[in-house]
Length: 158
Image (cartoon, rainbow, N blue to C red):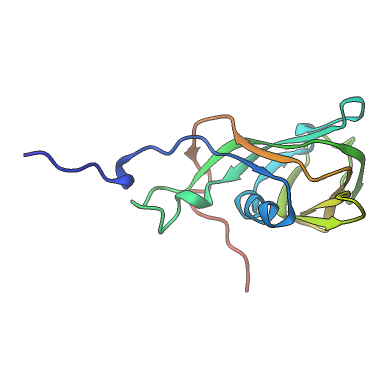
């Protein structure tokens, strides 16, 4: 006797999501909340108008309610921004390449004619601000998921 396949039995494919408006960016912000990365994984290529982070993001989509209960997982992902005109930071020392940063949120502040500012709020009062010609963001998993070193999901005091 055979049994029908269930969604919960499948391994999930790597995530690849784009955002071109503030509503789309809210989804990406949720998925990168609590992502951690060393300052050395920040790349700003002014001549190509590109900004990218290589982050270790918590796989919120694999938590309770996503089918079978798994151990807490992280995955390395690239968070890539196109059409970046200027990058500024607060509370981030670009010379301290070993400092570990943590993403709290990613938000878009619209300007004129589709332009605006993307603000990445970091734990510890840090922030990265990207002035963009238009919103063009891509979040892409680049490794297989791995067990989170802590063995549990991040939590925030209420």
